[in-house]
Length: 256
Image 1 (cartoon, one colour):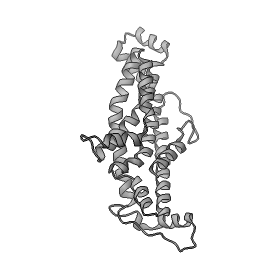
Image 2 (cartoon, helix red, strand yellow):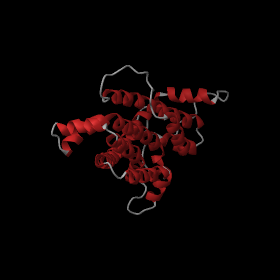
Image 3 (tube, one colour):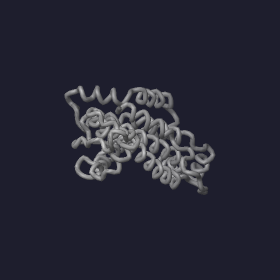
Image 4 (cartoon, one colour):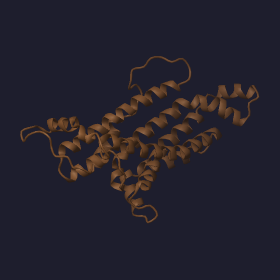
C-alpha cells in the first residue's frame, strides 16, 4: 500500500497481535490504497481475466464435446496450460515490448491460467451426456444445434459450473501476484509491506485474501447448487468444493 503503515502495538506485542491491530485500524481499509479499494481492483482483474478465458474455453470445450472427438488434444492443451507457472508467464509477457509491465500483461497471464479447468469440464460435461437422452431427443426430431442447446448443455451444467468455479477461485487467488506486473491487487499489500519489513501487514494481507476467497467460494457454491438440474437437496457448505486452501496457499507463497 502507498502509505506504508507503521506497526501497531508495542515492542512486546506478538506478530498475531500486531496483525489484528493492523486489521482493526480503519485507515488501512479506507482511501485510495485501502483494502476495500484494492479489493475492487482485484475483482476487476479477476473478472476481466475470467471473461476472456470463458470466451475461449467454453465454446471450444462445448463444441468439441458435442462432436465427440478431440479429447486427447483437449487434455494435452489443458495440461500444458496448467504446467506453466503464472508468475513465470507474467515475467515472460512483461519482457515483451507489446505487453510490458501493466494490467494487460497480468490479465493475459491470468486468462491463460483460467482456461484449462473450464475447457476440460466443458468438454467432459457435454461429451458424457447420457446416450439414451440423446437418442430420445433425436426421436423427437431434434437436430444437432437443438440437441446441443436443449439437451447437452442443460445436462452438462453441473460440470460447466464446476469448471467455472475452480477457474474463478484459482484466478482470484493467483491475481495476488499480478502486483508484480504493475497491477493494483490485494497482493500490493504483501509486496510493498514485505519490502519495508512490515510483517504484520504482510500477514494481514494474506489473511484478507484467504477470507475473501472463502467468501467467494460460498457464493459460487450457492450458484453451482442453483444450476444443478433435478431435485435439489440440502448440502453442507464445502461438499465437493475445490481444494481452496491449497489454491490460496500457493498464490500467497508465490507473492511472498
